[in-house]
Image 1 (spheres, helix red, strand yellow):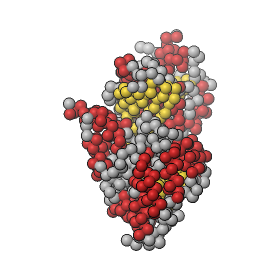
Image 2 (cartoon, helix red, strand yellow; image 1 turned 120 degrees about the vertical axis):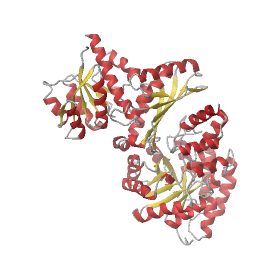
Image 3 (tube, chains in turn red, brown; image 1 turned 180 degrees about the vertical axis):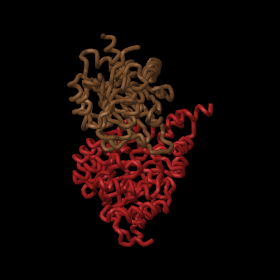
Image 4 (tube, helix red, strand yellow; image 1 turned 135 degrees about the vertical axis):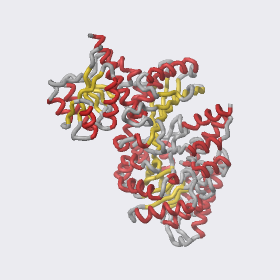
Amino acid sequence: MNIQGRKVTLHDMSLRDGMHPQRHQISVDQMVDIAKALDAAKVPLIEVTHGDGLGGASVNYGFPAHTDQEYITAVVNAVSTSKVSALLLPGIGTVDHLRMAADCGISTIRVATHCTEANVSRQHINLGRDMGLDTVGFLMMAHMISPEEILEQAKLMESYGANCIYCTDSAGYMLPDDVTERIALLRSELAPETEIGFHGHHNMAMGVANSLAAIEAGANRIDGSAAGLGAGAGNTPLEAMAAVLDRLGAETGVDIFKLMDAAEDHVLPIMDEPVRLSRDSLVLGYAGAYSSFLLFAKRAQAKYGVPSHEILLEMANRKTVGGQEDLIEDIAMEMARKRG
Amino acid sequence: MTKKFKAAIIGPGNIGTDLLMKCLRSDIIEPVWMVGIEESAGIKRAREYGLRVSTDGVDGLVAAFDEAPVDFAFDATSAYVHAENSRKLNELGVMMIDLTPAAIGPYCVPPVNLDAIMADTPKDNVNMVTCGGQATIPLVASVSRVQPVAYAEIVATVASKSVGMGTRDNIDEFTRTTSAAIAQVGGADEGKAIIIINPAEPPLIMRDTVHCLTKDPADAEAITASVKDMVKEVQTYVPGYRLLNDPIIDGNRVTITVEVEGLGDFLPKYAGNLDIMTAAGLKTAEMIARRKLAAG
């Protein structure tokens, strides 16, 4: 692989995707502490939002310890060179949340839809672009459709004003060839000035390998998470990604030893439970279910006595998409009834 | 035979045509006009059913109103043109039932607040909220009539094929309108709405989860009974409205899940989200018509 001299923007997810394993309970102080460590490591972009994006505070997904506004404001004020992004899922958050986040000082808004539903993002991408934000279209569960279908959706987001399009492996299902096909087609067909990104989950232990495949095929933004803190088996471990890119001679501008410090000394200590490649998260990746279903399935297991990995398998079989957490308890009840 | 009240349907698309099929079965509402802005499959179909048609918008109806007057008009067009449609027809004494997101008139969820809306001063325009609102607000109200609800949240999961471009272009409007109506009509202090669109094939049937946080610990027995009564009430106009499990009650959290299968009149059965809008619109007209009959 030759990616010598390629410029790659690393984007940390620990304070957004990492909210899932922490049940959205990361404190403002912990966020500030981690953000400062990432800032010291010169990580260019840090995402800060409820795990399910702006406005995600809910019974369905979990109420966070603080509001998006409190988190974003605190982190924006804590960093010197890092910029802050927020995630927004139309259908959960609205343009009102986007305006609030912009007022708090985010530089980047990432508008996320299921990979086939890009046309619900028009108003949010339009507004992000109009406000002069770095505006990203984020196509989730991208393993579920063909590269050609993803391209069609990516072109919609590009037409609304997104300057960067993400191929998002929300289930951690993809293998490197899947990533290569998708990213290469996006790179050849989208405008040359449109950036391309890849967001991985480590459910099949493919986080770093998939991200490298993405870079080789033309992506220049890569999501990862310090110490991997994220849904499922976590995101691509950012410190490992940075170290690999350094060895390959790609340019990230990140201080890899300080990033290792951030992961080891600041993120690891706050983990409720180790984020690891457990049986449940492997099933997520193997079968293709949304990574943040993990804790909900575990809770359903505790309440109804049915194995969480079987619930997750059923969620994948039913072709569920991100946000359908409310189905998990139903499935568990149904499985429990069948078992008598 | 009881007197039938005459109605116009504005918007000969899928929603308007489904509404037409339902109106044709009504024992008290008779569809006499289909209003479009051009020749279309929907206009042609309405003509075949013997309706008068306008291809010149509401103006065509207004011009011939003396020959074929109506008591009710259903507007299944868009928020952009609804205000004008409503103004022109209200001037002729027509009661407007608004299926668009315009919401000029009060929110109306028939089994919950229609009687209250019409009780004091008769209104000439009511708004049918959103599909998610029609499917879930009865359930929120069924909890809030038992005990105070501090917060209610709904999650509507719908088939991608059942979500039209109007909703997609302005999905925030769904979120905002539904949230507002959960509080105003459902009786919760605060409301929140989430919509999830799933493209699976075959298309999934609309599914709605309602979470209520009661101020005091939830009275499981009374709430369960109230929810079941309300489900029966909604089933009188949406037979495919089904409670999936008994309400899950945990401290002050009440979670209720329903599935909404449409009648498949013109819209496919999985599109319960659209069916419940047309069914609720017709139910509203029928309830108002019966009030008028009763009042003489």
